Image (cartoon, rainbow, N blue to C red; front, side):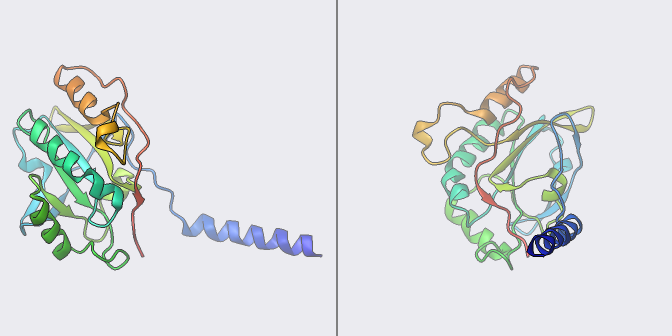
Length: 203
C-alpha cells in the first residue's frame, strides 16, 4: 500500500513539475540574438542598435550581490577597456528580481557602478524579460555577439575565464581568446564553457 502511495505521489509531483518548471533554453552558438532596450544606471534607455560602429558585444549578466560577480568586477572593467576601442564593448545586465535579491535594485546598481567606476552600461532587466531569451542561468554569464549583415550572431557562451576566485591563477581566458579570434576573422576555438556563479534570483 505504501509503495502505491509513493508511486502516486511521485507521479503527481512529476506532473505538477512538468507544468510549473519552465526549462531554460535560450540561445545557442550560431543563433541570431534580438536587440533589447533596458534602463541604464544613468537613467537612459540603452539598445545594442545604439552602437552603430560596434563589431559586436560582450553581453554579461551580472549583479551586485553575487560573490562571483563581485570578484569578476575588475576583470569585466578590464575587458571593456581592452576591447571597447576594438569594437567589442561590454554591456552588463542585472537579471535579478530585487524583490528576491536584496541589494539588486536599480538604486543599488547606481551606487555600485559609481563606487567601482564602471566604464560600461549597467542595465536593469526590469520584469526579467531578457535573461530568459538568452538562456542565462548564472551571474556572471557571458554571451559574445558578432555583428554581421546587421544581425547579431552568438559566437560564445559561458564563463569569462577558468578561475572564478583568483585572477592571478587564470590560465585560460575564454572571452579574450574568443574576441581575439573574431577580430582576426576566425571562429573561436572554444565557443562554450560552463558559467560559474550564483543562480539568477526570481520570485
